[in-house]
Length: 364
Image (tube, rainbow, N blue to C red; front, side, top):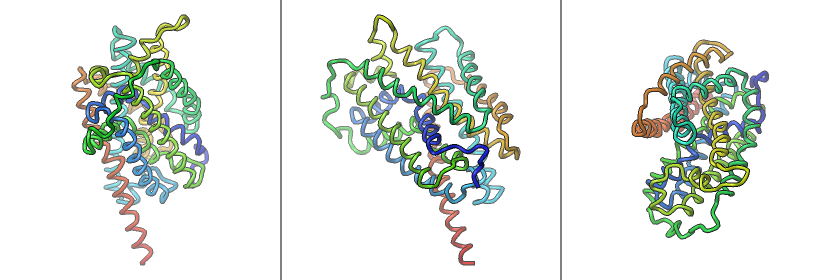
């Protein structure tokens, strides 16, 4: 049975997945995918969205067999307590490292654009403190906050439209397919880390008060919206900046906004960032919640408040280690490859094992 005291609706699930997916990577996505797929980067984004949808179906097929469990309980039921605890521990580590990466990337952009003289330790502490303030609450309360924050996403789209120049060179997108199938596929991998967040279904399925079809529909819609937004931002960046220019513009959307001024608002990019900060914070909250629920499962506690406080310490300390952009890029690359283990390999293996277990039990 689902936990009714912490249940969320299918709409709240949609917004939680959406807010987790639209995170810190949205600003640098056009730049990072262009390094691989060139002007076909927008095709890589679409392909990444389709791959993510397949992964969502696999995760859904697994969790629907265990409606009263999160991934932590499912791992133990399928593989036994010993291997289950190992898998659960790895998921806690994964969510902790993703939280750390979000914190690092957040302070890196904020320090570059808004607070160049503020120590990074202060920026990260304030963001982590704000995240803890909400993460310690029940999932239903967190979901309501995500619902409110989602109303800010259209504002970001409107601001991007405002910054769009009258003259855009659409020929920069042609010829379509010039990068080649292999580079487009590799580019989809570089997009994947910006689209992470759908794996929250491994945790949230237990709490959704809806039938299986409604749940998969909500998560699919969230992924579809994320894909459309990313394709939109990528195409706009490609038609505004030439192929040579975008190679040296790490946050093309912000550079477009910076060029626009109004009598009332001089720096549109700062307005954009003020909204973006809130959206990024929800991504950090999601992964901190994911790790906290796992740690509380280990401690055999229903409440995850203490676990969130405990995990905040290593997250903060780990985020202080990287000193330059090269180290940050290396960490992002390693996490990008490691994420396949948690969003695809583990769910597929657990699903296969669960099918084998159920087949054996039926024969008996």
